[in-house]
Length: 379
Image 1 (cartoon, rainbow, N blue to C red):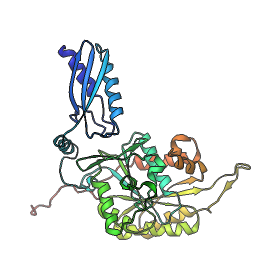
Image 2 (spheres, rainbow, N blue to C red; image 1 turned 90 degrees about the horizontal axis):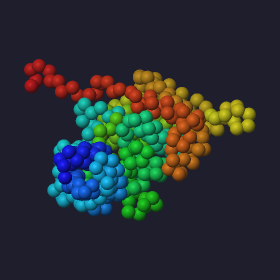
Image 3 (cartoon, rainbow, N blue to C red; image 1 turned 90 degrees about the vertical axis):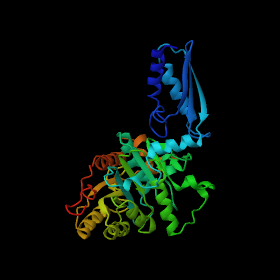
Image 4 (cartoon, rainbow, N blue to C red; image 1 turned 135 degrees about the vertical axis):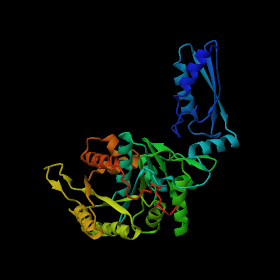
């Protein structure tokens, strides 16, 4: 086999990314061997685990990449499984350490972290979060989504991300849907969707900590957390574990929902969290018969929340947008098909896209970041 042909095969393999880790399989040392005899290329690939759910995808990618090399007429792919030592080396390559620490809490980390909160359930917080995540990913950002609603997790259904994560030496490789890496309590329940989660406060904290520290998120541009309603254990744990996270409050227009949403935002005063904005969901929509706006859930609640939080917290809390009521937003959630993708021109999709672009394009300043500077005389 000419060295030049082998070099072309190596170059082709370097373009093959692992579908979960999103790095070339050559960089991850997943290529066991390769050779070309009489135009037939045989490539042996190490899988992380024997039941790797992405084995077919990896096989297809290797065949397509190597099959395009001039001089290769057929490609045979052989699969093997990494040893325990190889998996430990892979983990070390990915995380660079053995300690279980939260990368998003490290000084200098540039991932934008948004915790999406609401005062009460039923305001469409999870639907808004899922669609924002998908829209950000569609715009080219690398996005992670933590379903921090441990008891009432719904993100897997909304995104169709129900595959179990892959475990590599205690490291959790999250499933991906629409370009969004997702982790939820659903993956850790043998009984599936119907099995309840009976956790007390400390267990909720540990579960959230595991989602943040033990999951391999990679280099994210944005991390979203779908919080449970209210101001309970998880909201407080998020502030402790992710001190640089910013809060987004979701409400509906009605007064009762707005009053409760204000309390969710006011928690930031105690946790020292920044509130970056308010989203009003289920706003007015045009009557299908006369075109006049219909306020099914009242009006003005989002503006009231934004103005009240701005006044009470002494900072600018903008109303990021008013998402019109659209039954297709709910239908898309039930089917695991986000509205921003299935109906991109819908008024609700347009508003969600504007909010996603606004949050996704924000640059974090130096406020709150450790610059590694020590005052003279204190070294």
